[in-house]
Image 1: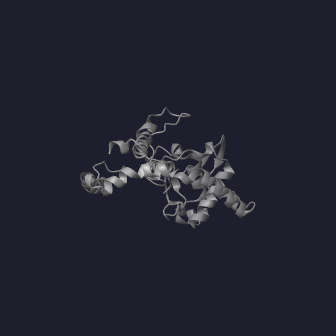
Image 2: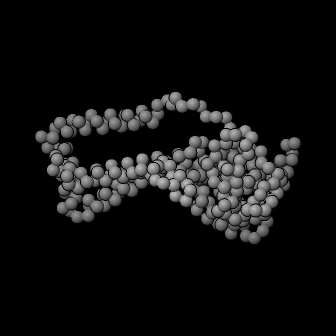
Image 3: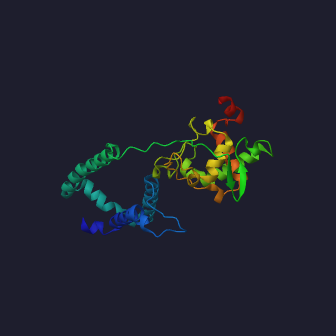
Length: 263
C-alpha cells in the first residue's frame, strides 16, 4: 500500500489536504488587502473551491491511461484483493462513522447566546448627504419610472445587481447568495413580503446608498454587513437596481399616498 500511495493517489490526497488547510485556515491570516480584512470564507464557497480542486486533480490523473491506471491501482487493491481485507473492514466502519459525525455536528443544538433583538426597518431620515450633496427622501419617488425607457432602466438595474448584489442576495433575490452563509443575520430576501414590498423606493435608496455603516445608533445593534454603495454606484445606478429588484421580485413599491393613509 505504501508504494501505491506514493504515486498519483497519494499526491492527490496531499494536494486536497493542503488546499483545504489553505482555504479554511490560511486565508484568514493573509494580511488585509486595501484595508479590508479577508477573514474566513463561508462554507458554501469553501465547498465550491474544494470541488474545483478535485476536478482539477481528476483532469490531471486522467491525462493519460498509464497515470489513470496508477491512480486506480491502490483503490482497486483495497476493494478486491484478499490481503487488503482489514483495509476494507476499516473503510466500511470509518466512512459511515465519519458521515454520522458530520451529520450530528450540523444538526446538534447550539449553546450560543440568543440573537439580540433588532429592528429590521429602522426609521429613515428626512434627508441624507449623498455623494457630497443634500438629498431629500420624504415624498421622493423613483425618478426612472417616469423618465426614459423602462426596459433600458431594467436592464441597467440587472447589470448592477448581478455585478454587485448577487454574491449576498442571490440569483433569485432570496438572500441565498454564495456568501450568505457567512453572515448572521443573513442578507435580506427581497422575495419576502416583509422586506421591500413594505417599503417606499426612497427608503430602499437610503438603505442601499448608506448600507450598514449608515444605520442610526438608535435601536442598535443592526448587524448589517452591507457596504455603503454610494461609494461605488451613481445615483441612477442605485435607482435602476431598485427598479430591477421590485420587478424581479414581483412586488409593487409602497407609495407616499399609502404612507399618509396610515397616519
